[in-house]
Length: 146
Image (cartoon, rainbow, N blue to C red):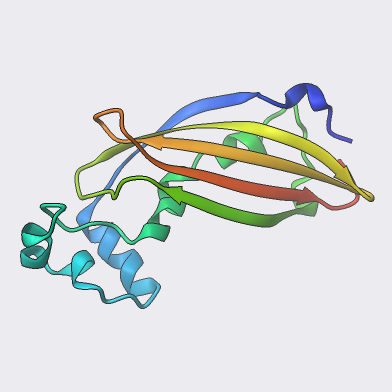
């Protein structure tokens, strides 16, 4: 069982600079050909003033901090038994090329379900202006307990 004293534990801030080509590569990988991601003229003429990243690109920058959770020596998770249970995003602002996104992550809940431990992680991502762009939530299941 994972000790509940870790609820609220925060992890170091991660930083990710949004790159135009990475946005386009991601959009291609998910087979989304929206001109908002690819066509600079469409981006310039849009309400955003530039291209924007596909919404699920948030997975790239907002869950970087999960590595801190996974390899936290205090938690000592059995990584071989860890399964990604759920993931959700709350999108508040689009991200654009050149944005520098900083993300703070923390454990928001620890529970036991049967013989499994369940950890809920939340990450808040802000752009260089301090505006929250995304809140990500992920749930991890450690099968058989820790």
